[in-house]
Image (cartoon, rainbow over all chains, first blue to last red):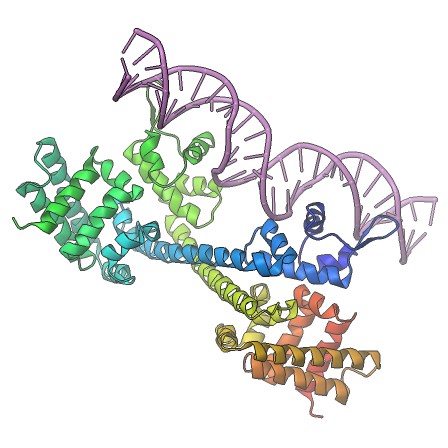
Length: 248
Length: 248
DNA sequence: CTTGACCCTCACGCCACGTGAGGCCCCATA
DNA sequence: TATGGGGCCTCACGTGGCGTGAGGGTCAAG
């Protein structure tokens, strides 16, 4: 009886579905056409549910159950990687949410820029090398989170003012046609570095260079910066490199 | 340009979709009909993406963003809670997958029973009271995970043999018509408890009793046990209670 | 003999998009 | 100045994992 089957915690419809797609076909039918699930069927159902809890697709589950040795490892590995990614993503978001909560308590709405500075690291894993450049070790961003957790409303206001001033400086430099490796742009880059260093996390010239790479390679950063002016991200990138690799 | 927008990490189609459902309408169109996203639009998009990561439906996101100041703090708190839940869930899944992979490498296909013992805890949260009985504190299952992580293939073989023997013992007791509160059944219950205690986690009589409650109240466990014989779960439950509350 | 709780089979709905098809637009190059 | 290649646009149907009826048969109890 589907009665017993439903006691496994799934809906009748789900069983119908599994039957329809051939994932779990009851081994018998009553003369009235009722589905009859044997103990073996129930065992299979249990395995299916276990894998479903791991959030594998039904097709993947079918393959695992059909050809355990070969397919299972692949699927499991893939799923493991997927879940790890999601986990680190969630960590970042948790930090972001905490920030947002505090900012909210203080009556400040975080600007997207700040959101990006703080947690816009979700794609970092796609750029593992740059990420290492940027964060040095994986916990650097937590340092940032710890520091900023203590900031008051006044602090945030000043941080934002500083950041805006820096951005405006870059905008003016671009509009004035100043070269990205000129002294003015380099000074702005250094100002940017010190801004990060002071308010967020220790930012060496080396780390700063890694960050610059991100600004042009990670579309999220690129989009953010280029919102200020077209070509902004590239300009800032060049200025940071110039600042990092040469003295004034 | 949608170009810039796509750089935020979402597909063009997604933007079209958000436009179509009115979640994110670009603030302008070029004369050729191209969507033009302003900085404000991008900010909104970023917020949307954050909430999307929280696995909220787009409709929910729309409502949240529509009702900004009033109860934003509530939403943030909820998001935070959900994120933390989600993360611990993912941790469990990761542990479970690692177990599966190990078991696989050792060439053992875990039986559903073992899978239940190892990581069949996902529904426990729906039965908070029993879960507390079973796990005492929330980290007990992690202890189980830690212990079992070190087991070799031989260990697993022995564990399985022990478990099977215990189950067979119960089956014979039932078939022989022995009462669940009789000495034989109680001995089997005690054997079961020691099995868990030895291989998985410290299992007091009290914890064992909580587990017994689960066996009859949680359909997943019930279905598992009753696969061995009808009425099995109830019998085991009664035997465990008898063993826990009286001496031989 | 009805009643109500099951079961069955279609078959369409849902969400968050993916994936073309068919057709403008725009810039660059031959 | 045609021509190509890469945007962009709007339909519009496909997908996964079911939910949710509609319309009808089955079965033990009253």
